[in-house]
Length: 317
Ligand SMILES: [Zn+2]
Image (cartoon, rainbow, N blue to C red; front, side):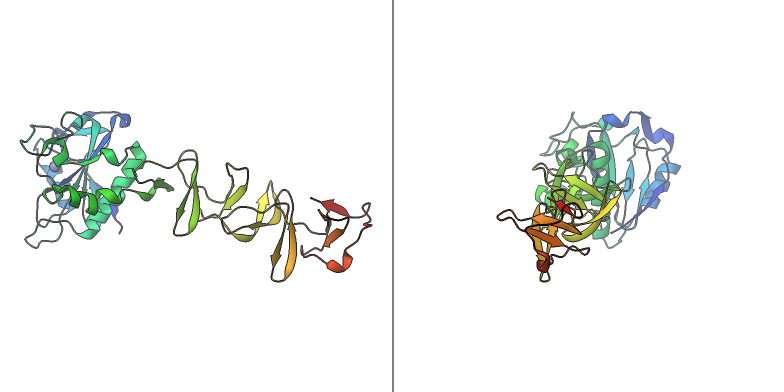
């Protein structure tokens, strides 16, 4: 699933006036009703002909063509209300506050139906627009839901619309080279962790997935996300205020602190800041014994002592 992005603007008589991006509240899904057409054909058609109709985008199996800029009103959902079960958004979703996306059918086979690649591209692209305009799933609707026109005819059946398109408007979305996560309602998750395929990821206050960064959890504990955004587990050599140290993260990605951990038969101490202790004493919590950890961090039991030379050696907590 991937697409190249193209622009071929429609004749200016096919669309309306400029608008602010902030007025976009709905994303409307259409079909071109053709058997065997492409986004490029449609782009050309609306560029070369004055038909007083338009849509912002046309999608097919391998590309998407922009025909009307987002910040201009397309003539796409206006007109009468049909006398059928559709049209529940009539009067609420209008040309002025909506963005229209048309699905082509680039496989000519006497059936008007988009390819799975076209559907996947349209889902992917719609999600980027949901992020861009803060439109959640409840406001991604079919033309049929706007006025009852049988568009797309194959998704007038609400259960098909849900299962083939609408239910999939969630999860990871890449917009402006940043990753976002849409929850089950299509809202951008912010200030929160999400779990995907057994990995944890953190979404920042603006919804962008954090990478290569320390994350302070609500409980006061710390985690670290790597360049893929995944919360790391196990040992990691990381910088904190330009000082590199070894840190250890449990299976949930929580940094271990003020604790011993055993690894391959050796014991290591993570200090209160989480950094692994080296060349230091750690005092027992239950006796007067001081334990020595060497340069590699491993405990050296033969150096256990009750009388460490604390002028020469440091004690860490
Ligand atoms: Zn339509």
